[in-house]
Image 1: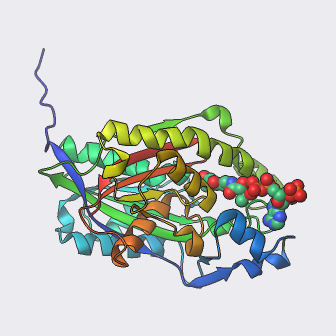
Image 2: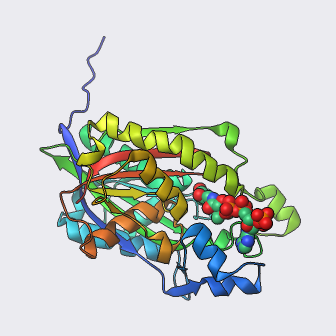
Length: 331
Ligand code: ACO
């Protein structure tokens, strides 16, 4: 039998940098009252959201993704030619093929990178990060660019009382590369396809063509809420256990920003110390789907609320149903 060389790489990987982009239009809760029977008070109390950002003139998933990725590359201080893979996590790109990642790689001046899109909804960033960590550690790329870009406003049904006010647009990106110490813990991830009907697209291509209506996002909010505060709570604990980190060693917690009350429940479940910095970007950005976690991470770091080198727990969960989380060292 002919011997085939195996790929080999560094023992560890870490996140080198993070960047993000928010679109220009600020949409407050009042905006929705012309479409749904609700109130600013109800939306704020039930979700934590006071406002969100939506794309405006000249903004789209490409412009946001390029801005976030450009910042991450610049901050990492690496040579673009050494980025061997580009992963875009998104559910907002309207072409089933080709993927958007190859175009983004070319526009960013990254030559000949492996490039593909990942569809894992609100868990998309953590899925992409898990792949990037494995790619770096197997030596199949020196650096990996993980981008998460979403324009959920385009598939939001503004007449739906249960979802109209939940989502915001934006993008976040990180560079993952080799490290002498470990900066990304084992991923805890999984899926439950029996719950595909909990968050859904209102029409597939055939139905959209015959009805002439652009598909929207539908959601059974109560079921997501229940799942997030029970099953996902247990998964957060598993992320810590797998990484060998105890709750009192954790410095920053960046859960998916689906609802402030979900975050509160996760905090109570984990019994995190008072001084742990907790992401609350939902209050002014809404739920940015896959882009939520890197956007919140960038905001905590640039505002000085969190610091480079701190230990953070991240976890994303959403349509599929799918989830993924890791303990990381902040870039
Ligand atoms: N404004 C005012 N009142 C409302 C509204 C509204 N928009 N919607 C519902 N209500 C009322 C209901 O009629 C009900 O009234 P009643 O008690 O008199 O019957 C009451 O408020 C409670 O209704 P619920 O549907 O139980 O509302 P809930 O507290 O569950 O909040 C929400 C709804 C905010 C959607 C919540 O379920 C939630 O955040 N779920 C999680 C969503 C999520 O995490 N999504 C992430 C995944 S998305 C992805 O993967 C792309």
